[in-house]
Amino acid sequence: MEFGTAGYTMDHVFVLYDRGSNSVWYPSETALEAVGGARKGAAVPFLQEPAPVPLGEWLEAHPGSTILLPTEHDYRMLNRPTLGVGLEDTDAGVKVRGVMEGSPAAEAGLLAGDLLRSFGGHAVAERRDLRTILGELSAGDTVELVVVREGKELTLKTTLRKR
Image 1 (cartoon, one colour):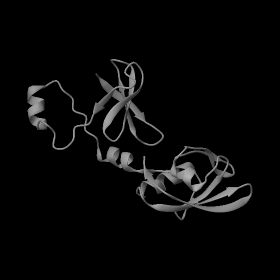
Image 2 (cartoon, one colour):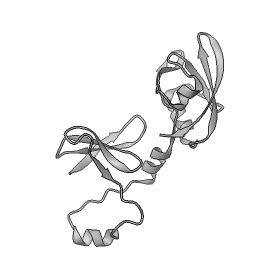
Image 3 (cartoon, rainbow, N blue to C red):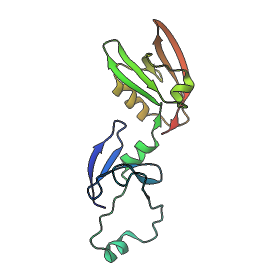
Image 4 (tube, helix red, strand yellow):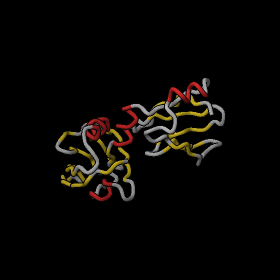
């Protein structure tokens, strides 16, 4: 496999592209998984610490190798909590486009069409506000959401989970 950069997804998770198979790879908690292309469904497990062979020994035995190591940013993104919504910025505010089944958003009672006004006590004026707020929270945190539904303000609560 020969990996190149595919960029970041909307969730700010780094995605890799395998030039040899034209496959797109996305990290889960335990592996790099092919989510598109000829190798779709394949997985390369992450080495757990301690690695079976010290890095220096591996590079001596396989001098042409390139080692991909998750960065601190990758770990933060994988462990960042999720709400489970699709959002869009509108003139009226941040509108919920969709809610993932079984997600913290679904458990809170969020519905498509709701306008998100605040999250965890912080105002939400744009989608990126929610991403910033989520970046400061952890899985297990309980948060209040203030939404406007059919002209009425509602306060909902949910407990965040790891993505």
